[in-house]
Amino acid sequence: MRLKAIFLAAILTTALPWATAQQPTPDEAAIRSVLAHEAEGWNKFDPHEVASVFTADAIWQNPFGVRLHGRAEIEKFLTDLLARPGYRAGTSTVPTKILDLRLTSPTTAAVWSDEKIEGLVNDISGNPMQPRHSYYLNVMVKQNGEWKISDAIIMDIVHLK
Figure 1 (cartoon, rainbow, N blue to C red):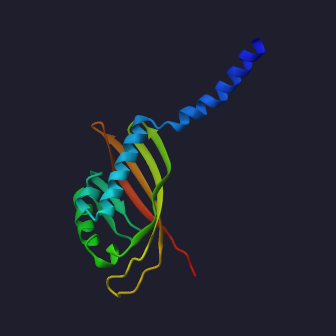
Figure 2 (figure 1 turned 180 degrees about the vertical axis):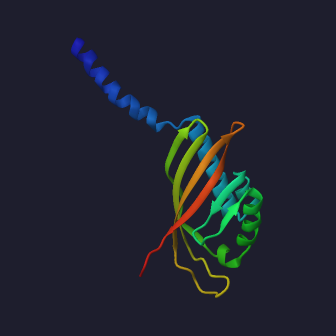
């Protein structure tokens, strides 16, 4: 009987951390929801919806060197970007996927994600753009019980032919 109890304890000791690790915390679930809302805004070409997930003083930078300060500036930039035919021509071939979500404190988190897009067209030249494989790093903050993006950087992997 004692051997059976030791065996059961050993199984629970190794299985319990794995089982609890599979269940997202309420904060992790809330962060995932915010990022899903942002992705939905991008998919609908809705600059207001995308910008709504950022803090008022957020910093956003894309791989082309555009660096924006504040939700209002982000929304203004996205209003132009999301209206461009060349941008609208793109299609996600691999939708945004969270690769790593780390709660760094009760009110901050770092989230790495990536996606792949094909079919974008340069609006100036009219030429097709190379497929993009983008990585995102979002710093999330919890303000007044709500998670928002305070800092975002988009980085592209350049595939040389």
